[in-house]
Length: 448
Image (cartoon, rainbow, N blue to C red; front, side, top):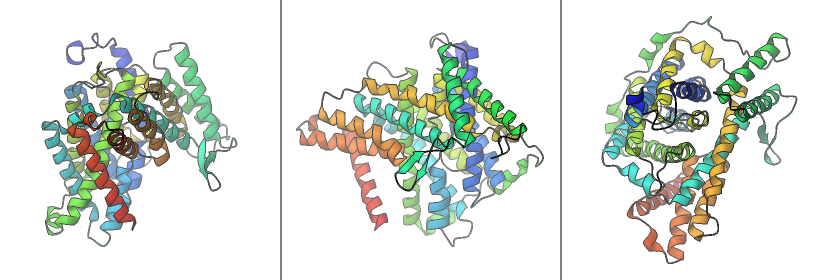
């Protein structure tokens, strides 16, 4: 373990890393239920479940052994909705088995990312982002994560009058999540090892007790093994690529591929910056060592995921929960990957973990990541200040890490030019600026 993951160098232990890996998995496990639900509208849901678990394990193992970072990977939220609703049911409506075309686009995106990783393009992007923006990105992700947790627990709900508002205290999901948050905070205060993980499990147990007493009736909180495993369903999703259609409709296919490419690129950049900052993995210049290996894990996961039958695989911001539990090395990621494999044969158990039990972990981790805002220098260069500010506010409000980075970079570059400091803009930042500008043009064209 020491030779492989350098535990002593990172000031951690096997026990701490394993507990952190379990914590990361439990906060990510919802994707094993959500992804089949979303992609199941156009594919075999059981096959998607197996494909998601396998692709997640493969990508996370690459992260563990190749990059040695405590980051878990799985099918990205947002990208799976784009896959199912926008591409398959929208742009490709009427085509036979449209999911095969979408999987082909995801596969090509993964290959492109593997090539870009060899040329260190994504590595240059992440190391070229100004340090003030990196801190803003980390803080913005913290707010975003907390917002997701509060939504999952019905603490924050949709509201016609004010867009969002406070949920009802008659909703036990909300009450249990708030109780879980207090439990986690208390355990962390008393330095209980694995406090976040214990908080998740205790909150779930409280829910099951309330259900057994007839108080909680919103959903079944107990694992149900009655339907069996249905592992053979992966034959309905694996190796279903359609290069024939791609060749006949090349322009449309390139446009679909680029959309996957864009969101995955900047979602991953934002997630890696945020998690690495929280884990103290950035160097004195604000750069992340071995970042190329991190992106390679993402690219390999996406490619394998497309072959197995799932949408784009990306680094998960929920990895910050494992970091908060003490994870610092690839052993955390390895543990998470093992749990994804175990989930294939114990799927009813993991799918039974309710969102109100994992939400407190996300809310608590959101607070920890938000602490990066204290490092943002708001009284310095106006471009740095506004760029960091937009990263913080746009991620949760636009519900997109990539969109938050887009606004931050565009504002930063424009203000550098306006304030006659264009010399501070690196060639890579100019490239990123142009990519975001083209993205806005594409969004305007689609809106019209």
